Amino acid sequence: MRQIKIDGQYITLGQLLKKLDLIDSGGQAKIFLQEREVKVNQQLELRRGRKIYPQDIVDIAGYGIVQVVQL
Image (cartoon, rainbow, N blue to C red; front, side, top):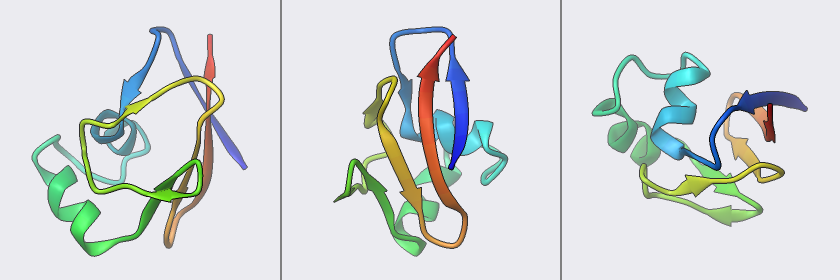
């Protein structure tokens, strides 16, 4: 499981995908989420603006599992 560190209270799902270099811009997040299954804490997620908090687990099909942690 890969850990991603954030310095704020949360990161949006679109920002996380960009930070992981899975997309180049926030606008691509919507398309990415339509094409791949992404689960946040085992629940399917389609909203790029979903807030991801420290200790949340994000499972991205074809990529792997990511845990967000606070700096």
